[in-house]
Image: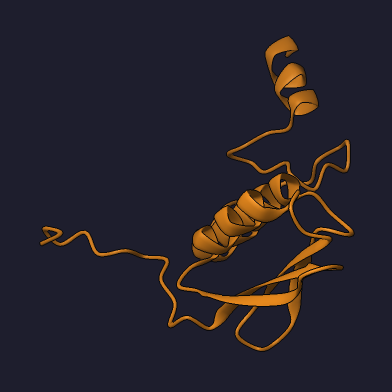
Amino acid sequence: MTGGLDPTEEYDGSITVRLLDDTDGTRQIQCTSYYEAIDLVKEHQYAVTVAKIIDRDGDVVFTSAEMDIGDWAVEWEHAKRRLSVTVDEYECPYDSVACFADDLCVQCQMDKIQN
């Protein structure tokens, strides 16, 4: 029993990790969460040619040929947080996409300390 703390990020297996290998072909693995998909990609990213995460609509949301899974996971966390929480709009003077009112980029943090 979880004592009322049920998982907040769970899916019905509709997230797919597709592992493409030049020699072994393609493997598809169903995942119950994006966290599980991210872990799978991190585990297999150097053993395959390309790893992809496909959402429930069939859209490729990540491909290792074009981006790093660590960078993508950070951006995904930020996007998820933006959707789930009402935060004040913040316009970063340095045009950092990862800069938020409650989570400033390094340059904005330095400006805040200097002021």
